[in-house]
Amino acid sequence: AAGDIFHFESDLSELLGRDLGVTRFSVLQAGEDVSSGLPGTALHFPIVFGDRNFGCLLLECRDGDSPWTAEDALFFGEIAGKTGMVLLNRERLDALEKLKESELFLKKAQEVARTGHWRIDIPGNRILWSEETYRIFGLPSGSPVTLETFSSMVHPSDRTTVEESWERALRGEPYFLRHRILCGDEIRWVEER
Image 1: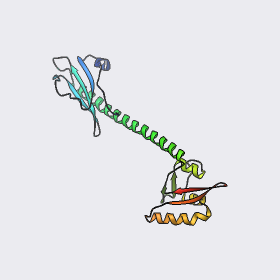
Image 2: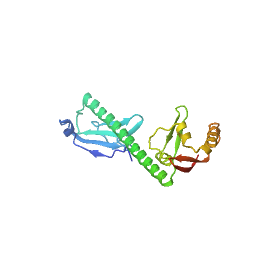
Image 3: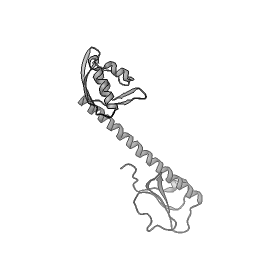
Image 4: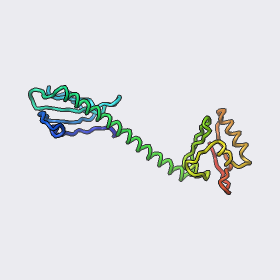
C-alpha cells in the first residue's frame, strides 16, 4: 500500500562518512514494535508528517557508551521528518495517478456509451462539458461554452421547451428533457438530465 515502509538496514558509516559504531540503521514500518529489547544506546525517531505516522527510523550502536551527539539527534530527526514528507508526497502522487486512470476510464466509458456530462456555472455564464459532450455537440474540445452558445445549438422549435425546463430546474424541479440540437447541417436528438 502507498506509504508503507518496509524494514531495511544499511551501514550508517557509508552515509555519514564516519564510524559511529552503528550496528544497525533501520526503517521500520508503522506498527512494528521497537520499544522492547533496545539497548540504551539505541535511538529511534518517528517518521511522521502532519497527522500521519509512517514508521520509525532506528539506530543501534555497539554496546558501551552512546556515541550520539545533540547534532546527531537533530540530523536524524530531520531525516525522519523529511522521509515522512517524501512518503506523504508519494501517496499523493499515487492518488493522482489513480485519479488520472479513473478519468481515462470514465472518458472511454462515455465514448462507448455516447454519453457525456456537463456542469453549469450560472454566475460565470459558463457550461463545463466533458470530452464526449463536445463530440456530441460537434464542437472542438475545450471551446468556451456559454448559455448563449448552448441555446444557439438547440433546434429553434425546441428552444422554448429547453428554456422552460431550465427554469423549472433552477426552482429545484427534476431536469429531464429530450430535444434536438443543430450540428452544422445535421440535426441530432439528445437527452439531458
